[in-house]
Image (cartoon, rainbow, N blue to C red; front, side, top):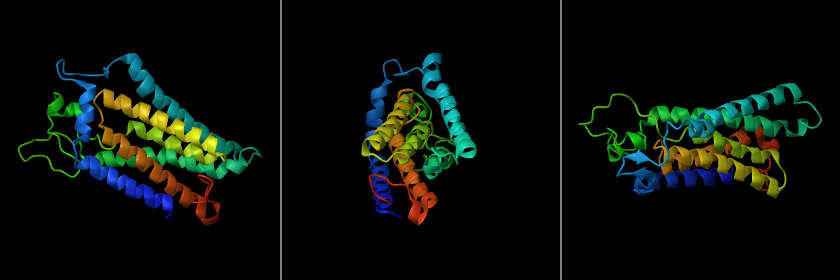
Length: 231
């Protein structure tokens, strides 16, 4: 493992513990909820907003992944594409592995969405990832809200920075990945689907997976350069 991987693991662990043992998530989430009208900042059923930030973005993401795949299979040996083949493989792997990993975690953590909590008009008590539900609470089905799945696709695009050699271009690619990831994350917070901590953990987990894929796929001598250094 490289220094960046170690550092990301540390930041991920510390961030998880901060959100796990503090009330930050609730304090932030309260700002997205109107307690007097028991409604969220954004109506999850608004068709236009739902299309722009959920259904539409999913279609764009699938098309992007398919375009990457077709490019690698059909044009991978072309003169303009060949130098970027390794980086494109890492980007493609990131766009698949990151959402799959996050969704596997969602299926096992059994954490409820904010809108499902009694605090916000739901039926679930608030428990963190490492806490058990009270014995008096009868759970009808497993909860699937940690970490943030929808934002994972946006944060997977952080891997685009591997396609570029100049600091400015890499910064723009990272900015785009963060911008898309946080736009989707904030949308989900505004409709009551996720806490701040869910999105932060997804972002850090996505970056960790990108670094690890870069290390594994790049190999000892072929790892794509990040921040002007080999990792």
